[in-house]
Length: 431
Ligand SMILES: Nc1nc2c(c(=O)[nH]1)N[C@H]1C(S)=C(S)[C@@H](COP(=O)(O)O)O[C@H]1N2
Ligand SMILES: [Mo]
Picture 1 (cartoon, rainbow, N blue to C red):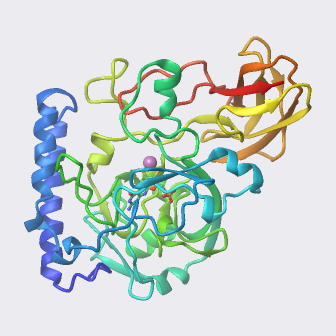
Picture 2 (cartoon, helix red, strand yellow; picture 1 turned 45 degrees about the horizontal axis):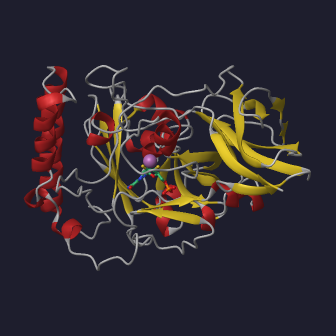
């Protein structure tokens, strides 16, 4: 059935059925307003999620004990000059991008893992596509099968929805829950693979299909308080799936490395990072809207400015810019410095980056070094010769081809997603 090593097909089927039943129940609750996120109903819902993830419903091979992972459970080396480790995740030091080219080398690319990087064998891996949104039975594809489709390459960022979350706290005085990323939960790569649209067509996509739910083969996600959310999975509308999403098996010209989804991950250009499911194992195709904790509890905007059930599920990323400078970098006065950075938007090409070296009183246009493209980034630079010694703040402000400019502040949301405000980068000018 699957590539998980689960030998007992009936166990896998049981798990699927119970999960499908759970999702149907969850959908009914959602539709009847019982599953509002926030308040008591939400707590009930969390209990339900926990119940649905009980070990008895889980294929044995998936819950087999693993050797305790050393460190964060990431395979590649995480030298401190390139990475900041946050629990099971590794943030890239944005300043270290200064000596990289346009794309982010695999060795520098941030890792966001809910659990640990699984070691999967490409030779036995299979993708199972199933659900009532297919015209016929479930279909399996090996890596060799996928390679028979026409390959395509997309140059795109993967960026966590929580990238820059820490600035909600440090700039706006109100933190969001979750990993305190600064600006390094992003990387840009050339992703090569095949169009999901082509594979779905081959699998027999029904015209009645509305949602797909890709799911990873990594361990079930269990929070520190014991809530089991099951395996990482997040629904996506068929419209996006058929548009520009690929099943990627190469990153920057080499087979996808373990930490980034080996052997195959989804790559959903411009969308929040969670949409790009790593270690892809199966895709449910459904004629009804699908729900998982990753589009109900997580990856919506909650808070004062939003309805109790939260915003619509997050889709596109936002607009940002950042300096390739360490925080509190020391810059000698009376010297001409070349400040460099990158700017990106999910909505359009970056058309302008302005920099302020006087706390936002005056702005100068930076020079753009790349022809911008939505869902990717543009490098920029600007000279600066500071005269006054002491602490200073450097600001960068990007504008994209839709006319959107980074605002001064971002409306707060409890989980600290989609920070898009101008970042005030502290430096010290030394004498
Ligand atoms: N199976 C699986 N897919 C996943 C995740 C995960 O933990 N498990 N994390 C998601 C999140 S939240 C992000 S931001 C991106 C990070 O991709 P990267 O680790 O390749 O940088 O992967 C997404 N896909
Ligand atoms: Mo993420």
